[in-house]
Image 1 (cartoon, rainbow, N blue to C red):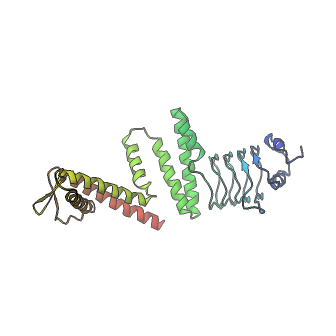
Image 2 (image 1 turned 30 degrees about the vertical axis):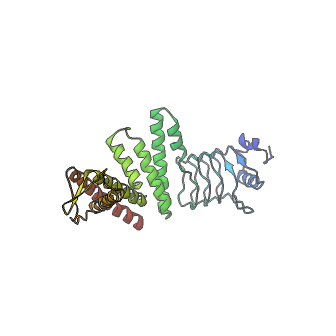
Image 3 (image 1 turned 90 degrees about the horizontal axis):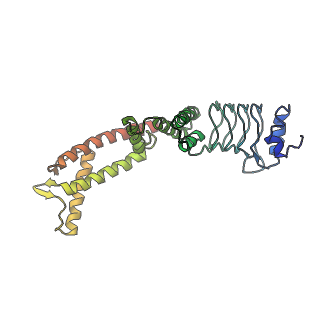
Length: 303
């Protein structure tokens, strides 16, 4: 019973009611052996010191049951909690800098005033992964709802701590979870997906630049085949023309696409026939995307 290095004692919760549980766990951690699948739910670990001062790596406390455990003011620098159940655990005022919280159940976990810099959260939280694996639509919807709530909470907490990049990541994930609860082919979901692809819900301004370049190049190709007019000279692809002539025609089509997208409209080149329709569409897209870029850029700069 008193052998703290025997993993079976911890995995079967034999220390559950020990008055010195906090000290026992600290001493067990100092053995430097991985602590895996320990059952430590509803335990009081407030102010516990789980910092491995002798190594660049933190202690390992993986796949453990820490449901509703109290880690207030705990020192958990670089600790590896990956795969653990942290549901409703209290980490308020704790030091979790550089900790590994990937694949943890974070539903209801309290991180108020905790130190959360350089945490490895993983690309997807547990509920999001489980929602993608299940074939039950109702279960999937519930899991996406839980994931949205967790991402929203993490976004607010990291915003309060001034971790703007991390908060931006969580905001994007929050919006993605909201989208996945919508009917598959609904207009609302399609629009949401387009906003995600074009600017990452306002968190990826570089995507707008890439989208703009893609649109300009696509419309340049359209104008190259549908025809433009410059000083009574028709600009259009001609199979019988030389390669250099067609290249020159394409560059002029690209120039027209750029001035149309940016709504400059110098008037030196005019659209012909159906090119007028495509020019109108590109101008509308350009005006919208340029306005979107300004909004996203200002948001990023003023956060």
